[in-house]
Length: 385
Image (cartoon, rainbow, N blue to C red; front, side):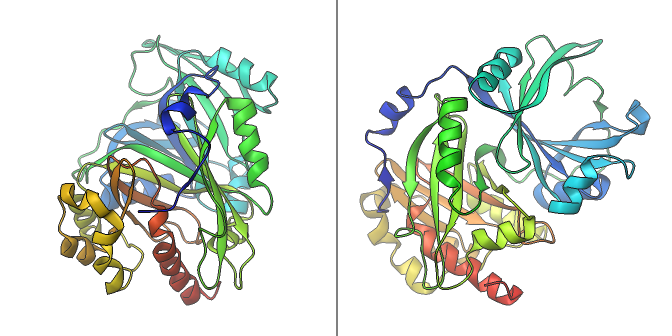
């Protein structure tokens, strides 16, 4: 099984230790700034099985930006494009290309969430704001985090509408079937050299998170590159944000490549949960989604040794996993299956992870070497290793 460096206690003890002055109910939505929201929406529907959900644009009275909201089970993504050259969104696109701007968190009290975090040192992005329509009201507030990423707190308890005031239902005759995505499992941020511990402390102090898993460059390395990572979680364990930074290696790591092309820190990947990864990956491959290459034969031959006693409960055939290049890992609680897409934008930045947890609470530490070697093969092709 994977060697994982935990903090002092078991997971339950760790979560109990979180200062849950900021109770988070879940991920509300993830907003991407993109160059062409209409075309991006078509891609996420076609390739990833998201469904048309809500819309804001000129037709709804929005003169500055257009947003398409797509949904699959509990996951909502918002794709936003500016409607004129003066929009501040253009600065984000010019610097970063398409990427995640807002990680919105569902809360009971958006005003208190803003007050609690700003008094603990967060820089305000959006003061508590009441947004109303005939379906009620939503209160949103927000704070800046690493890079140009922001957290928006969303309070919905007095709203019966579809998404947010200002949006209308998006009717479409084209809705490919879902692929099995259930919810956001975790989101990973990349930060610069020596900045990981700074942002770990920020999440601890400002948001009451705890660091419950840590990986250093002795665990996460290949012949050529290395990185370090710490996983932050809120008090109830529903929100998990691993934070990566580069480490010294013989060549340029994937984190360095990201930072160079994104031109700063940002969200590296979004991990989405599925109950049947084999079905999900088959669907995604059939729709044109590209994944990282499979590890060598020896990786799959060694799965029984790595899983140990968990092999007795494993339902999947190793040959099926190998055919689809799905990775397997285990911890004390069970096993997990995971696979990573190639970047879904032109710059080698944002990608997706598909994960199925069969009891395991880790992040696939036993797969790091195989995963990063696969990423390095892509970097070599790009000439960025």
